[in-house]
Length: 296
Ligand code: SAM
Image 1: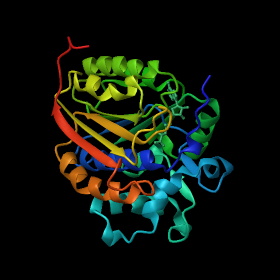
Image 2 (image 1 turned 90 degrees about the horizontal axis):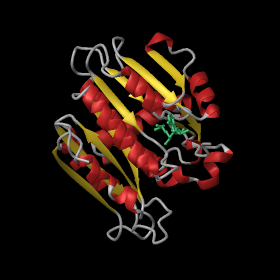
Image 3 (image 1 turned 30 degrees about the vertical axis):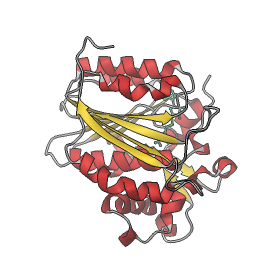
Image 4 (image 1 turned 180 degrees about the vertical axis):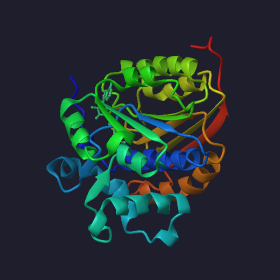
């Protein structure tokens, strides 16, 4: 039984990193004049009210998008200013007022699509799947919402008819076997469709399965990979708190590393937890070539 609800965490530092990267990926991949399939395997509810009891309980957005909301766009690197502008757009008439709404990855992905592109959304939690379907009820045939397992959905969709795809894999890692499940699903996905772009989010926790995850992903048989992580404080000794998170991208656009190199120092500065700047807060940005199918 799933207990994770993204409404408690929407707009936190992990969402900032994930959604910034997602927008950059979409921006690049929609430049080529050929249909793109975007598959969001773990879509969540699609939209979040930051004034709701859920969001207010932990108020995680205050340490994420909340820190960027008041910064003048001219004081942000262009990619970060563009991300904040999208969140303002989602806030509609209240774009210049206090922060109220936060979009999920499905809406951010939808905004980046052209008519020829397709968006496929999966959500397993029945309540969030219902909310997601309601949020996209007027989206037409371009967007398809499925209440079910996104990894099985990805498997069924690959390779896409246009042979161009961006897959966002953003699980909640409620059980530690999730790491191995994602790894196996990616192995299978690369066998079906080696040239897709796969973006995997993961939490940086003080636990072996989380710490070893990026090194395992480096061994997947993709042509190239890019790994970015953003840490807002030193790791918690108890291993429970999420001091940072990472995005691991297989077959990334060649432009992404340079964009992130420009954005990350500023993000660390803005999102470092109180009193932590210059101590535990930091980023990691690395890239390389993938392994071979025989690697484990
Ligand atoms: N991607 C969303 C965003 O950025 O706005 C947030 C997703 S949240 C971190 C993870 C979601 O995955 C939860 O809503 C959870 O219910 C859902 N989930 C967990 N296992 C799943 C599975 N096997 N297939 C589809 N959704 C799943």
